[in-house]
Image (cartoon, rainbow, N blue to C red; front, side, top):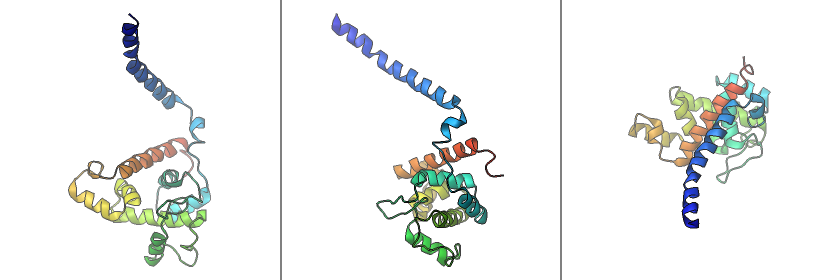
Length: 193
């Protein structure tokens, strides 16, 4: 008989897991904004606003990219060499200067750990991607992570970018940025008016 009890109890585990997930989801959806603001901060507000305005970007989208790229750590550096808040490659920053999108006299591509500099270059690049992809935010976000060539290739394969992305990291990144974007707009509705 002890073996029968074990199996009867064991069958309740999936039910308990579903119940726990539902309870956590309910609490998460009902939690006050004050609970989430520490998880979704806005640092360097003046730089985000200034660069967002000058590059015609939604500042909440900029915050979502920063949150997803570096979690607001200006000293963040990837294994590939991307640097700062918006995780820019020095070559990308140089390209923004060469295209005339960033004033090379005011901002140096060699100073990407400086928040003002990084946000300016990151906003220029994000704006460039949005223009390149005819305003498609999802395409621009995916290209920010995987590169323009990959997104161009995926667009040729399918009419749905979400279905065409072949990199799991980029799929997760697109979801993460979009979720953070919604969260920032919800938590700070009057921040940028």
